[in-house]
Picture 1 (cartoon, rainbow over the protein chains, first blue to last red):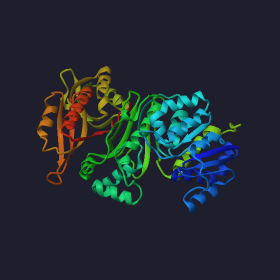
Picture 2 (cartoon, each protein chain N blue to C red; picture 1 turned 90 degrees about the vertical axis):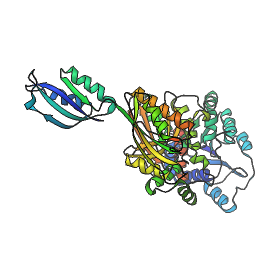
Picture 3 (cartoon, each protein chain N blue to C red; picture 1 turned 90 degrees about the horizontal axis):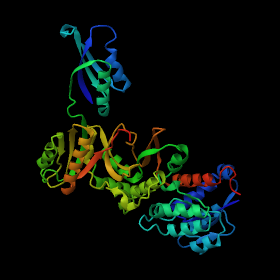
Picture 4 (spheres, rainbow over the protein chains, first blue to last red; picture 1 turned 120 degrees about the vertical axis):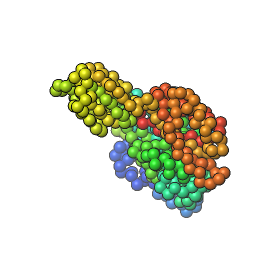
Length: 331
Length: 168
């Protein structure tokens, strides 16, 4: 029986719990029996004997969980085999997730996270810590949501030299730019409509200034190119200055404009709006994400998919779970 | 890029393929062939004019291959400025002296601004322009790009660069 402790019970955490319950049969065929042994959010918790459905219902009705055991205490008690960490991202401090993850790895237990912050701030430290304590850290959910990127490069393209990665790693900005292209409307108007639709946050700076895409690029560069880069190393420009006329004249020349994150083996690390040929696979529309990977053996490989959303993120978290414990490897 | 290539071929069977095969092998496209038998050269060679479409970075390799097969190349046009790239600029382009920006590129001698399309929606609002620069070689184009970026940075103009479609 694999015991999963879930830290963070917001949209992502609840989405993960729901997906575990809904796809239990499929998942158990791969990893054997599992249960969630503890759930903890910023102010409440549930431990002991409970079902996923009960926890979800309690949170929905009461806005919290029944107990008040803190995250630290749950980690110290250690009644779990793996932590799934879904607390909010802070790409500058990495906290609170970073502290939790270190503690779990130190105890020799596995971690799966959807939280970019800890990996952006301390990628190599966490990888080394995991190795040293014979634990693992899975972070597929931090880059590109449901799109399999990290494991595809690690496994599917194993043995390739990756030369360059370019992608659209932020769905919100891609949505805004797609609509500016189609409707030739100004940026502030499309932004406020995106906010009404819940596609952009009330404070959109994280997305539109390129911070989110930059954070994901740091994780990709560290994991794929084996670099030791930090958020400050990324040259970042956002989309706020782009005019509707820019699309008009770009389209006349056969281009559109997209926010592209690019990293290569020579150390290029840039997030910026770019002219993208309308025939290029990266000229995608709506909230989609996509990554174009250039390798020496496989040539170009293109992945496209949904970059965010509770089910999509759950899909990536579960893929790490199966990666860790598949084929009856849990004992 | 598309260019015109005039070669002289011996007047015997199997000559045309010496030009067409390298074009095809490099992934190029023959747009037209004019075979003018009335203008045989003193050495009894026939001038043949090709219009060819091929990736800019492959032009030199292609020409070398054609020469290697023993074909005499009489002329090539539109290849003086081989490398071309378009950039989008957003900001106060006119107020910050557009001609200065263009001159700085043209003064290099190895690159020039070949096209500008500018739109100015309202007075005092940022204008948007697409600027096309041609350069003699890849390195020269990179230098021209750096000059453009440096000027625009100083003038607070946003430069949107194209996604390079050549493989890494």
